Length: 451
Image (cartoon, rainbow, N blue to C red; front, side, top):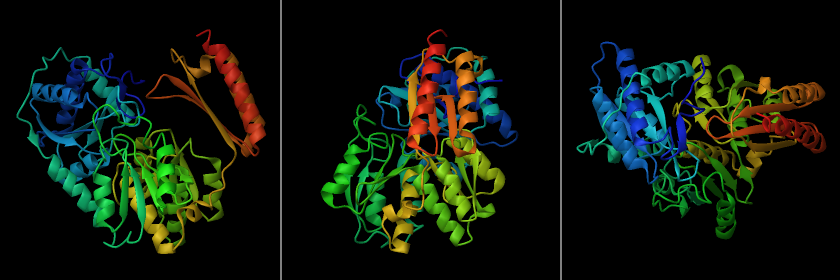
């Protein structure tokens, strides 16, 4: 059964829309509460942790979620503004019944969303989300008033995350490093700078003043121009950019070159292979990662195990197979020994530590990944009819895959969080990739204009 409300990473959309408003979130929280309470059986835990990013709509949605939880006899506890990976660590430490993170990740400030996190720090499976949607249909309207009186553990959760990260590395790890941090005016504002300074770095912080309205606006991991300019202007050794809830990472080297998720995964996995510390000699990545990542690992005696798009699928596969490194090209990266959630700051520290240990630049770490030429395009859509039901596009897609064979890849999927179709082509030459993409775009536009 397909999901109606949940997408790739929770429920997300414009605040005030049909899926992101106080009334809907109150009912959704109540349904989630019923699901986890029934799953817990005899466990008496009633606390549910609530985290959020810096969006203006966050406090109102937090109040709505709290009302929904109280409706089903649970005790909401506020963690305030906190990165998603910090919420996951708080769950691992304290074992609440579950947690809710209010964030639309890298989306604009006008959007918001809701993610569900288990007591073990992992996100839910598709089947579990379908079950919650069924319970949601049974929920009646919940009056949302000023709930007041929420226990606030935000300061403690923030301190625990900060100390947990700092404790993994030597206090002088970044001594002599100048590091630029773009916090996207989001949940990591101030926090990432504190941890980097604790480890000896001279920190230059940008997009570090959240006001509710500027989160992800021309800053953060989706807009790295400011990060690159600041790294060059300040002569920094490194830079890093978060998204709104700091589970995504983009790294910048001293030259201004950007390291995306594929480059970071390649560097960490190759080092682990050299140290015989990569279980199964396996890196877990999604179908969006460049084919060059597979070739890179194969040359070193490793392999890439692919999952559908979404960091929770990566995490599920890592847990099932006992794998330690995984992620997405978009920058959702998981080091399982550190956090079951994608953790932008935690992974950045691991990459910086690797560069320091080897005595090389970030650019040198990334140089072993040789990418296949690739082109991508995002097509806005009004609706999302099944792709296999689009006759012209289906023929074009099959033809493209036959044409490329083992020398390239074609990906076509609807976004799970936005109204668009994402197309991606990799080939041995840029010309071939561009040609195949153009053919797919023409076919998609022809079919979708009639959908």
